[in-house]
Every structure is written in C-alpha cells, then in structure tokens.
Length: 313
Image: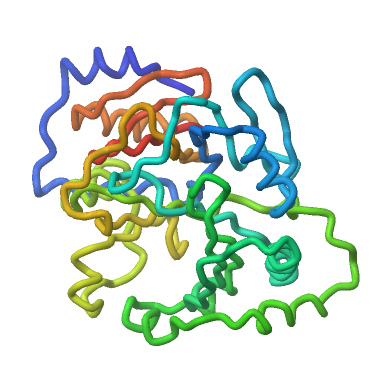
C-alpha cells in the first residue's frame, strides 16, 4: 500500500499547511472505481438467501459471523452478522448500492427472477445514463440493479438528464430477453459495484470531503438543476463516469449517524489504480485532519457524516 498511515502522520505533522483557496482542487485518478460494500446484518442466513436465490449472487466465502458474496470474482458484498443489530431510520448511511450488469439481457434476467419470486420492487427508471431497477434487500438496504447505456448517449448536463429521465416499463426491460437464448446462470461474472448513493448530514462538508480532499469530480453541471434538487443532492465521479458516489440530505439536514448497533452500511470501497495514488489520497486526508485507520484490507476513513470508506489500491 506504499507509505504507511503512521509515517504519513509523522511527516504531515512536520510539514502540513492548511489548504488555501488558491490551491488547485485535486483530481483522483480517472481509473478509480468502487469495490465491495460491507453491511452489518441481523440475520446472515436470510440475507444470503435473498442475494443468492433472487439476484443470483454466489457465496465466495463464509467464516464465523462474516461472508463474502459476488459473481465469482472480487467480492461485491460483504456481510457481518450481529443478532442484536436493528434497522434505524432517519440517519445518515446507505440510500442504495448499484450493482452494475454488463448487458440489457442480464438486467432482464434479474427482473425475470424478481417477478418469478414475487419480490417487491420500488420502481424502474431510465436516467439517460443507465437503466435502473430499485428494490430493498431482506433487511431494507437499498439496491439499484443497473445497466449503463453507451457513454456516447449519456446526457451532458443535469438539465438534459432531467429531460430524458423517465419511467422504464417492465416490457421494455423484458424485450432484452430476446437478445440471447442462453440459460441464465446467475449474476454475470462481469458485474461490478457501479456506484453507491449515501444519506449525508449536510452538503457543504460533503462537497469539501469528496471533491476537495478525495478528489472526485462533479460529472454534471448543476447550474440548471431545479433549486430543490440542487440544494439537496450532489453526485461525484472519477474520470468521465456519470457518477460513482451520490449524496443527499433527504433524511433531513443535520441527520445523525446511525448508532453502533444499527444494521446497514459499515463501509464502501474505493479502489485507486496504484499505491502512489493511494499515498496521495491518504496524504490529503491527513492534511485535512481526517481520522484514518490502517487495516489489513486498506485504509479506513469516514466522511464528515460518518459514512465509512475503505481506500485500497
């Protein structure tokens, strides 16, 4: 992972200076992507059955009170069971995790499985950038099942995105079943975590953390967004992607972080391309006096609303 957290702390204690308004806003490496999300769950068996039987996830490993699930490659989802944990509403935390499939056919197969198992969904949308199916998991964690349109088709502004945003009829999704006669064998191995969408406490510190410190860009011009939306949500991306991280204050400005015994998000993972980039990001966090913890899987930190982020290369 390169320079250790302890060494960075020592070095920055001697040399750090506050960021001034004349300093350039950093840019995180454009090939940065997301890795697994990690939830605390009350009932491991119930959650594993949901993801496995309805959405076609595979159990990669299960040890003690924890498990890793995905599509056969990297873990997409990790679960840790706490039978005393309970769902708590009205806090910061996860709005949804977007599991991104590579083809419309894969999205159609997921909707077919949802229909066959009579699983409740919350809605479907065509956002111009991607198709989305929304549903909760067995403990209420938000899921977005997504397929990206080709990048050349993506809207270039928030105003254009809102003009193109529309509901997505199930028949339109199911039409992609004709793209292949192959049997569905579960979640496509090329599935990734496309983005996470978070509830945050307030937007200005959120902008400072994700843009000014971590270095994520703003993919859409919000100048023409409706005031009520522009003042309640911000989207961030590495490179030219439509968004890797969404944030909103829809739980109320000043929403508190969840208590320690709550189910839900423990952290999501940001994967940078190499240790040099990881060192740069960690240095910026130390310079801003953001707490860090070195773990065997990467560097763990939290945004200014308490949402956990695992940084790794």
